Length: 365
Image (tube, rainbow, N blue to C red; front, side, top):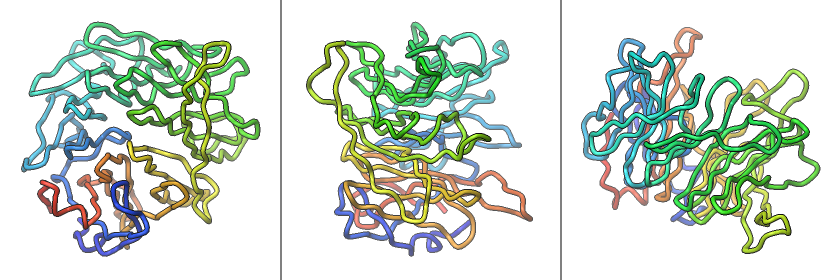
């Protein structure tokens, strides 16, 4: 495993509560061996808790790591995956029990596992969770967006058909994601508890998009695309190029009762033709992933008109997934052996060095 010095010495970035022009060094804390970070924007909360998977004998089991713990807490002995954790410490994910051939969503808090109702068909990973434990995601091969509590589950309505995905929720009950529209394009949408589903109208030069995350006050991170898209980077018919933007809701509605809003483009990394936002924190800092065709992903932080690259080691690749309101990042290390990519042996949390003194967070190597 890479030593801390291999990446800690790189200093190209800063975060929300530090002026980004200062560009402090990053300090990396390796999580226990065999633990990988959940892979969503909400895999890390402000307390430093991480939702993820503990791997043993090539089987994954949902678990949660908290600062001060030597080892993660195992949520279930069944095949499972924890993908999200709320600010209140409620974890969520999917689990396969002996009497359920398909995975179903769960929540976990204070040592108690609660299975949630599910829609018929296959269940994909839970994408987000509120502080009350309401989860959102999508189900089945047709990608039906859903939301669930411990009492009930429901499919979220679409613009033109039932396909789509729910990707984030805040404590006002606002859900964002994407939906197939009347023209069979994938459009960014918001499900508002007062007004229902609405498209987040985007500039006509784009052909579709998806909302990836949102802040406590309702700012939405949206990825817009030059052609219609699925869950892949490229399609056989079009080289899909993304442009991340932040949509801010105005305090007024149109005659149809839909909330009006404005798009603000984020800076685009030089040399990369495709960029997509992964997470936004309440300070407005955005975690970006960028790519050139057939090349490795690169990761950046964007804030206003500033853009800063995140460090990569000389060997192996760091994938950054989550960004919290402390400015900390969480992700996984991937290494290659004999040309074969194997699963990361440990996840990590990265913090700007000038924030580490106030953080109660032990390093594990």
